[in-house]
Amino acid sequence: MNPAHPSDPAHPSDPAHPSASAPARTAALPPLPGAPGGPALPSVEDLLADAVAVTLPMRVRFRGTDARQALLLRGPAGWAEFSPFPEYGPAESSAWLAAAIEAGWQGWPAPVRDVVPVNATVPAVEADAVESVLARYGEGITAVKVKVAEHRPGGGLVPGSHSADLARVRRVRELLPDAHVRIDANAGWTPAEAIAMLAELADVGLEYAEQPVPGIKKLARVRRELRARGVSTPIAADEAVRKAEDPLAVAAAGAADLIVVKVQPLGGVRRAAAIVAAAGLPAVVSSALDTSVGIAGGAALAAHLPALPHACGLGTAALFDDDVVAPAWTPRQGVLEAPGERAPEPDPALLGRVRADERTHAWWRDRVAAAHAVLAAGGR
Ligand SMILES: O=C(O)CCC(=O)C1=CC=C[C@@H](O)[C@@H]1C(=O)O
Ligand SMILES: [Mg+2]
Image (tube, rainbow, N blue to C red):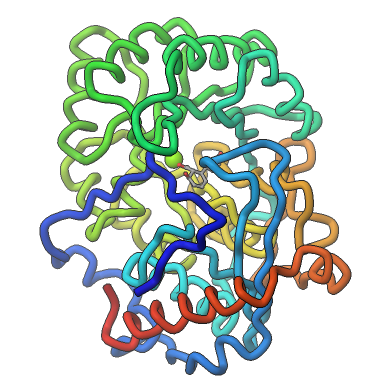
């Protein structure tokens, strides 16, 4: 078993939407570590030899947490991050471990571009706090993601969330009249709520709405009903890609206009790139609220994709009060540097400052061993 670390509450609005069974479509993806034809699976001892657990304090509460927990690993190809959210079990975490093995024991594929445009991310703050959040991203912001549909820890939307969401989105539009503005509901609305909110926001000219509702069928329904009402807001799939047993099912169903891809949940840069190619839809690379080591993996994916039509959600290191790399992998003039084929080296002084306690190290060691067992048995 893999209990959540008690200091980190589970996130209620990130539901899993597994499809019924692992379908043949995923067979075309690059094999996982330890699978036939895939990279070697290092032993648990090798993976943990130089592991450092860190806790990064956040400037703004995000995804229900004020501190991000992560484990940094070091392999022959460089540093790597393993940071499945505390409530994730071994099967889901095994994809995150595959991504860490790629980074540390294999290295990332070559980039085709030097820089990656990124969006600023605005958590579910009050409208009057939007300006100070945007200020953290500096000059040159061309795209903003606004979080909406925030849930209470016990479940259910925060009271008054619809009007707070509308005010937050409108405040962003007011401050940045020319920026692309996208929203992300993390599957937190019902279809009726999503249709009403997106119809209400039609005048804002949203770039897209990310995972307004859970699951593939509901996404398809919202998309269809919006079109019937003359609302053309594109629909993006996030959880329906990264938490599904078949990350290609949403594209196969024609339920979204674009997909959001994340390196750790999808098992590495090569697997995420293969998912984009097989989906045949425009893709946005986004963060998993990683430290600068993991963010560099997102930048490696974005720099490797043949086409990158949208700014990426990789600016989230700006939400941390502290990081592990100096300078942090944060955007300048709206772009992030591509890291090349390996992650940046953590700074020993920073590591000393954000190093987690021994109990947290033990918790991470158990999580690595449990995820490793899933990979050793052939994957989730
Ligand atoms: O895409 C961005 O701008 C920031 C990243 C982001 O929104 C997320 C990071 C980590 C966990 C997720 O709940 C969340 C997302 O849903 O995309
Ligand atoms: Mg999302």
